[in-house]
Length: 316
Length: 270
Image (cartoon, rainbow over the protein chains, first blue to last red):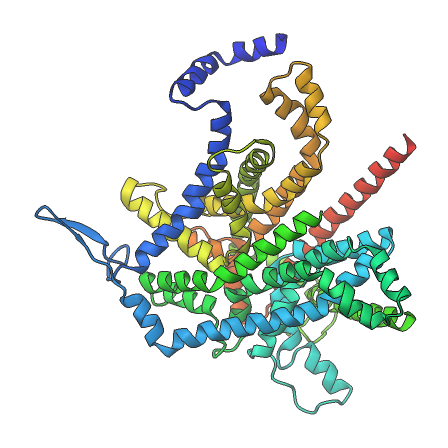
């Protein structure tokens, strides 16, 4: 009680402000809800509408470098919608092949990440609690160090006179250095390496809940461990697998840093195309159209992810 | 069974080698005398000296740290209020919208977030003359927005696990909702707030793509400077920088682990 009095004493305007807010219909609860809703609406949702708008405008040599969508002319409202940017995307084989290439690279990397990540997640989930915590920490730790610098580290591994070539030549396995940097191979390695923790964590969260008695029942009925794995463990972890795969696939499709640093000039990924349209060509409408089409490509994966995460939450 | 678990152990071991070999190599070659990053030429700390003599890197590091400090704090405020509202408030009109907006940045490609925010800032500049050019302020807004999404994940999981009875007790004793929140809920959530804050701080310090889009001339962050250096090829002072970052992170993790085991022991003794 006394504390509240001093609080009011310190803030003489507090009561007035409270009444004023009350009058315009914002009470405590509404005000609290408004903070995150308004912030995220303004800085997350609204920007997409702006992108959609600019993707329909015409590029121009101006500041900003596009023409307005509407203008008043003698009492007439003129609205000019320019679908040319989208037509251009489908006309020019560069963009189409960049989309296909991105989806292909992201999909292959996702499968490799799953093949590497599943056994790791399985082992971590099956180990004793103390070891489990240490192993989990080892998975998360790289995530805390700079992503850019970890991708950079692979340049030293993969380049012509890099660590891998030096080792292979020293033990006499090869005579000439292998070309690995600036290839699609390097991009695959970079994506698998960067996103492995994103695969392991949801898989682990799923596998750790797996009821051991199912496995025992299966074994009692005479199934071999490998049969039990494919008929019991794998189907039960389906939602964990989908969640992990989408967490790798979605950001990989739009990846810029990895293809820019590890890929070659012909590694066309859509994130890189968008970057170049924006920074090199300064064509904002085309960059916006590229972004909108990328979003459309990602709608299904994002929905799959939400469904898998909802299924996971239900099990908990 | 034995064969199966041996197979698993070998795969997992290879997996961990894969995760850590690049990091270890960064550290080792930061002490290399030779400029060729991958050929050992003797022990030396000269790249560290070079790093600290590079005004561009130092300046960018300072800009990045300032941005990360403010962004992490803002993101925690938005993320905490957002999570609290979503989990503790009964139905309200914008609940579905808020839940979508707070999780979507997690899965949105960075190039799209960066481009869309930049276009928003340009449009707002034309309409209302704010935010007055691009630079630290626009980067902070961008980082707090996607940071809030990460913070919300950490905070929500804590809020769901939290024992409601303490809050109810405070309410029964006559505390008003605001008092309950600041007096009970917030202190109980403190560890989650701290780890959320650290996560956003790290992500902000590390972000290249979004910052490149929304930044203007004059505000170069550390990743932007590192990226332009690294694009031209490997350079040992970048290894030195990486080693410093890895060192700080490892110290932080060890301190956190010690603190956790200490408080566990403390709890067991009681």
